Length: 156
Image (cartoon, rainbow, N blue to C red):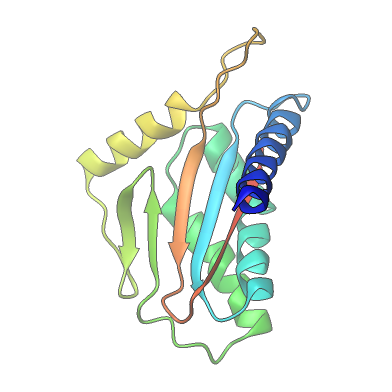
């Protein structure tokens, strides 16, 4: 039990340090935390997360405090179309800041929700360099709905 507690604590410290490294990057205004779950393999979940965080269109939207859900869905779809085009994603959902924005192959947005999502992204923006830096994240959760594995990815 003690070893499991130590391992969990070590993972938490390493995750916080990794986020701090990202947050302290030159020109970083936001840190995205992408959680991918419901994946049949860890590699597929990691690939989806990397596709989102490395997408220039997603980064541009987040930097502009724009909750452009289509860019995130596009990054996921582009990646999955290349590596696993036969996956059934009918149960795929996506949440930003805890609000469901995509389900059953369709966007579920309203002007009010877009305002709320934009506020969520702005709340994670680091206005200027001051210490200690805040620990806010732009939270994105993608559930592929086809497996049991999950992963989390951070970037700016």
